[in-house]
Length: 341
Ligand code: IPM
Ligand code: MG
Image (cartoon, rainbow, N blue to C red; front, side):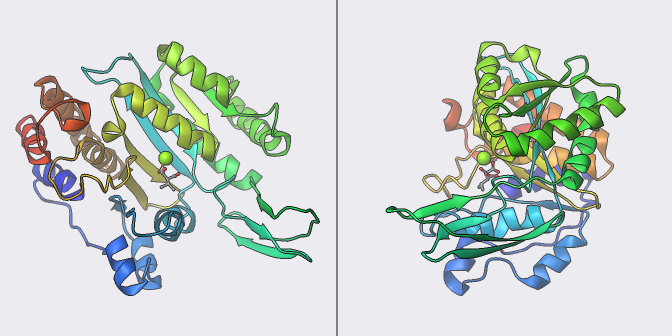
């Protein structure tokens, strides 16, 4: 989907963006067992932005590509916030203009866990914000497995501060902070505490809600939500829910941000191996991710124009098979390009 996005981007920027291509993929992993090299990491760190396509493949065991590439990039580049806007399109069943700010590196995504061996096991973890070591032992008739979710004040402070900078996109709708503080008490105690402090500094009263109730209220009446701040796992789930509500994962963009200049933009959808290579996949999530990237690169108006062109193309009735249409990827791109200034 990346060529579809860059075609639109090049059109609106007059080709002023210089790209460096990186070959991390399942294909390369199967061939060379390489996920991402240290060299690539170093180079990526210095980029202004990364436009990332899906890399999953059914031939590779679940978790390998995800942990080895995308989760690693998010973690090692310090991209602690993932923004996932969900705005209604002309055919959407729901009227909504929501942005989910998802914490992107901690909680249950740290990969801190595994099987507890008889006699005990030691687990090590290093992250941008925090590093730790844990010795676990247990006795049971059954095998024991665990995963630890960790949150650090340092990361939460910067997460909530950055999340607030996306508030203007959802004027007047308030801020919902999502957790499960009634059941998972340790993590979400500090989550609530820091959210309360950071939002108070900005003069905003947080509306705390449990994740299950947010899922329920979203489908009952999404119009009351504006900016949703969610922990990593809740953000993952709620952003798929919102994508489904606007019409499908194919329309959902995302951007991962940190403190430095580099940010990573990717469609929320995966690699859809069942239709890969047939020229029929929906490029809109990737194109809208490109629009978010232009905004990040200081080309806000061009990003907006690209988003508007997507809206106009959809209004013309150009649709891929995932929403019942018969247009191919190329036809969608051509239609978006036609509507660009
Ligand atoms: C997403 C994806 C990833 C995530 C997977 C591929 C690890 O579902 O970007 O939402 O859970 O973050
Ligand atoms: Mg997901």
